[in-house]
Length: 366
Ligand code: NAD
Image (cartoon, rainbow, N blue to C red; front, side):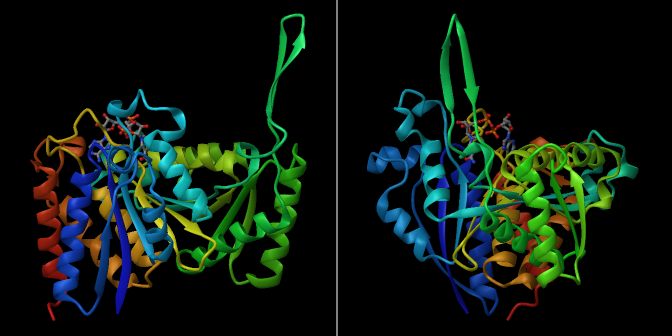
């Protein structure tokens, strides 16, 4: 089985963390039945320097033809002077738009060894495993009309439109229900049906979809403000949370921060084309530590693991990688960002090597 992957390391610590993903891919290619056809290309500032644009058309074509795209991070002070439309971030936005990546998956998973990194009490978050599914291409961030208008006498009015169609709600709902079937089989849908018509439609459509195709999954509804509160009060009540673009932006940040560490957080964005997805760490290019061997590669490695699970149908390999991350952490191996007393501090490169070693121990070499 050969999987077609495009790797886009990007800027800052992007190439450093991607090099560790590459080590794992190379090891898997050499030692398991699974093979990878890898293309590397530039995105963001690196692409601007090479092609004059933050996402070249040729790169985009390669991404379209791939089973999954793995990205590092984009951006940095070097490109601060560049026109807004050519900024590194514009390349990432274009990629998301062109691949029609409408479903953002943000897991919040607490590793036992890092339980003290959270600001919440250990008893509240031990064993936490939530998946937030956020609609990414609709809602108030894109709705028309929008703008700022002059009302005269020094008054101005800013306005945006929250808008969702049946089709948009049903397709994100389907992603959530399908994911739940592979996890804890529970979906909580969050909106504000009490005060917003778009929320009322959201609730009706999710309920209808559930009745039609997903009665085996447990569905609950919650107002988004209550959901924000429940995430702090009793986060383990949730399995999959599905919500719109605006509420998802806030709830996914809140949920992921329950785990305490930016260097550990993966994410995925799934597209309309079946199986296709973009996988990237939640963190940015961290210019403050770039080139120093201090970056934690685990968020990007866990993003690759999500690609194995959600785009490449290789759940067993994903399990092995996630288990290897657990083992490395349990053994007290840490990068600087998650360092604790009594643990051993590793460089980016050494963390990648430690992980490959654990993988090799766990997977019987063919
Ligand atoms: P950042 O996530 O890059 O860094 C925030 C802090 O977390 C920094 O102190 C950094 O050193 C640390 N950090 C981040 N990732 C880490 C890792 N893997 N290991 C150890 N420490 C890590 O956010 P920022 O500083 O606000 O932004 C820097 C640049 O990244 C900006 O140009 C911004 O636009 C860009 N950015 C890109 C993305 C993306 O590519 N998806 C996301 C966010 C920010």
